[in-house]
Length: 437
Figure 1 (tube, rainbow, N blue to C red):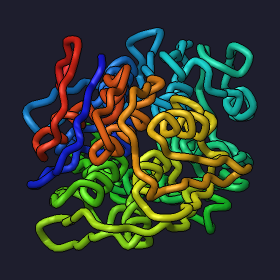
Figure 2: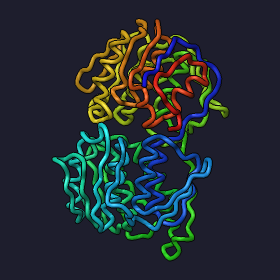
Figure 3: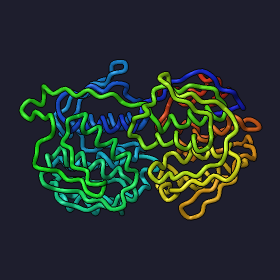
Figure 4: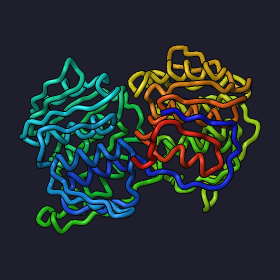
């Protein structure tokens, strides 16, 4: 599918989409916490759908009624021999340790770029926990057979915190006692905070967080747990607004606004809340009140930002920097190699087509902004965040911009183009496309 965007002026207000980071963690927690879970404001992105399909195959029952998801589970009791995590990196890394809780042999696979992402972490760690695993030279598919037995282990957290998320939930579900997970060079610490917050809200056993270097499970039971009456236990959780997708709306507002974005919690543990800091550094016109975050277009200056702990912000930051006078420096490029595309190179190439020069120097990206953005034909590279970044940058380009394979947004934000249209963007879609497909 192609989307063509004309230079536009935005106005009005919009409610941010549900966070897939929050939604997928809620699905996993509902699976292992046992009992009935009520999840409000559930997401409907492709990644969310993959998580729901996964917990169903692992034994949970669920139904969605309007804005409420009800999940009933008695723990990990697989009813299928294979799960498919789609293109969700979080799902594959989070659910694999949960699959390993079962004695049943399960094949774990995925689609698209997920098939090329490194999974040798599991080859190294799971055997130490009594789990049999076969991979395809460190990549998908994986063949897993548990049960996982919590033990003292040490892991590398430099690639992603998502592996740790899965292990923390698996240890909690196994009622781990007097064992620790030690972590070296942990990245994306705010995402670990989100995991721990979700675990707490689902009454899962929480480890003692020792400065993000060690997570120790004591012999004490989980707070609020009722092991003799799991079926009577009801957990209630509300999926947060998505700062990852919302970041694109905020940047769109300071490029082509005035708009108000509602539903983003300023007290959230989501890493991508840091977009607010970047906007302030760029001297963007942003104000926050009880009605939401208000944004206005205006002159902005280049800024310096460290995105090591929030690498998903690189695409909206590049769109922002394109309209900031001077050279913007963004650190953390090393976190981009194993995304849906190699995002450092992809951003350099696609924004290059729009007349924006980007330099990559080891772990640093330099964006030469304020020189005008050209309309062009660009390609999403099947990466949802690249499609959204190009769309936002196109809002004040010199002429129309066409995005090829624009349907990539369905992975995380299926309503993205519809939301831009509601705010006044002039865009057209070619080929059949259903927003809620």
